[in-house]
Image 1 (spheres, one colour):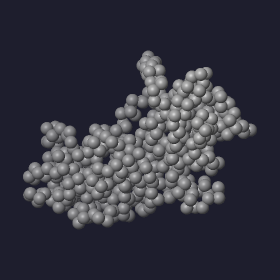
Image 2 (tube, each protein chain N blue to C red):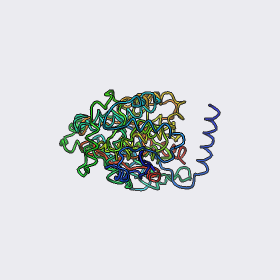
Image 3 (cartoon, rainbow over the protein chains, first blue to last red):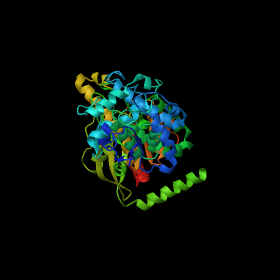
Image 4 (cartoon, rainbow over the protein chains, first blue to last red):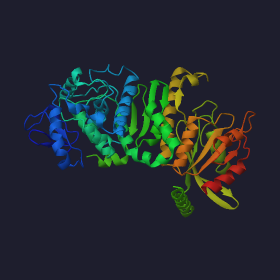
Length: 289
Length: 213
């Protein structure tokens, strides 16, 4: 039960669209996200204040919002680089912030929300996800509404970090991101992405979601090879440079070979505008509920 | 650490002995663009099956999809080694369509080639991660082998404990320097050859039987 209404406790399946217009039972607009396998006894106490923090309308930035900065380097880096991909790919055809009034692309919101299109629209069950770099046309009113309300600039710390606070569900406290990025599984990432997607953050290439997932999945092999300093250094250097494929302009690409090698999903086709299709690994789909 | 590495080596040796005679090993032909990978793949395939693998070209990134030739039976000293050859797109960190414009290509075609080449690199890297049992690494011996791409790919291959043959191709050209490649990768044996002219192919087949048999 990935989503739960904080008011009446009703739960919603991942990707559910019901909650977009508020809880059908109590009209509550706050939901908390509980990925599968989430230890509720441990997380419960933490979650209470967190969901309060995400109260969407007042848009206040609470101390919780700065939490990402305290997380492990790996996580920040993962989120940061995932966000960089959004910037790169979206920026391939338009200025990063030009598509809508969302917070700067270099945010956790951008990263986790990026999978929304693919998961929401394609139900995540297909082998192939077509990435969209622009808002999809069939976005419904609730989504559009939620998305536009996210845009309050004063909600955004502005330094590249923003918890996925979306009006539609207000459940996106920063804690979601560790769940997505600390290497539990690709499925968790999917859940997080779907959740943010339900919250209405749309319109970034889902490649990033894949990225976050893939990076988390491949963290362990990385550390296993820590006895190869040269390779590790090289990898680090490259990771800092850019994500797996950077579209400089149509026909000009920069490739991060380590990233491409580490990816679990497989890029099938690039589009002219920087979109690309990926094949999602079997394990993601199996774990996906 | 050394003990562990030794143990791992002996296990993988035992495993390879165990599995020989079963499914053919899938050998990826890797290397930077224009090193002669397809020429080599075609040469091997023609020598042992009579068919070619794919078109060759002097324009880089002619191979933009991995191509496979299955069940290539190579006979050495009365012993048969069966391998699947995977000819992969040239691996690079930058693909730029303007490079193709120099080869009298229209811009649209050049952009498309560039995009396909990029997909090809992604595919090649993906294959390396999951689908090859050994690697033939082809280098143009007239070019400087000390590149980021070569260092990284060889590093990845080593980290996977894949058997690798390094080839110094194009020895028929005057500027060729096999020693430069030997110096770059002293931890591996380098085999000089010209895939185009068919020079020293016998030694290559010996090595293939030895490394991948």
